[in-house]
Length: 269
Image (cartoon, rainbow, N blue to C red; front, side):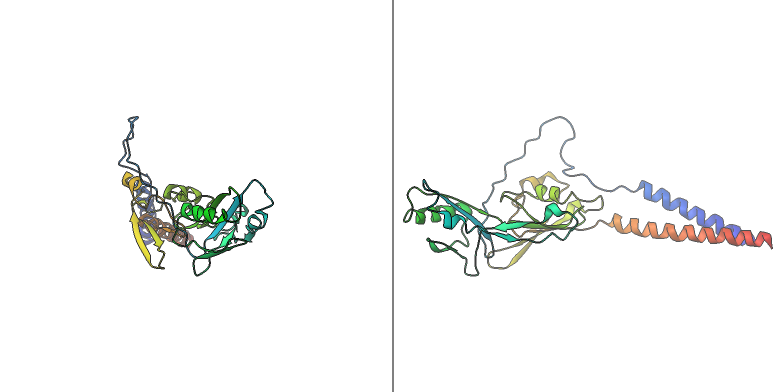
């Protein structure tokens, strides 16, 4: 019976130590930890925004305005809505996206009514707008052209609240905007080692590591995202430790309960 008491007391001692350990462990959850937490203003140098280049499979919304709205109606009507799909996160009906406009084909060309085929891949949206506006002057008087990418999408995966692929309504998106859309990192997200995978025009990919615990990321050339960027937040070791500790606590509780039952049975006998 003495051995039963030893098992019983040992099980509860282990459980107590695990509880103390889990309470005392610290999770690094702060952004920009090197910035002063006083009221003093900190100046951060400006990051030059580079306008994204149009890529194959982009969808462009092209609108041409003239004094006679009927003259360009056939072009503007071509910005037909294409049904999108719900992001991988699911459950959020507001996240279902639609993209409307003209598809940039595999040759980097869009085919506009009246204006014909125009190669836009590799151009920025401003350059493409100017090119289309110049070509429109052949057919229309004093045309004004607006152009934007309607399927500008980024993917956020890993330790965030809502991992998914998001279509954003503008081209000037920062890494903080993206994480905000995804509901921020979880407390287990590894803030000092966020992976950014970017696809280049030639189909090659490049990978970069970003440290969100330091303010230097606000000056990084990767602070502004580009279409089709992929962000991955890996889990910190604390998540694995917490998962292991929870499993061990469960086993310890079960073991303690069984030990208690064994002691009761022994005393009855």
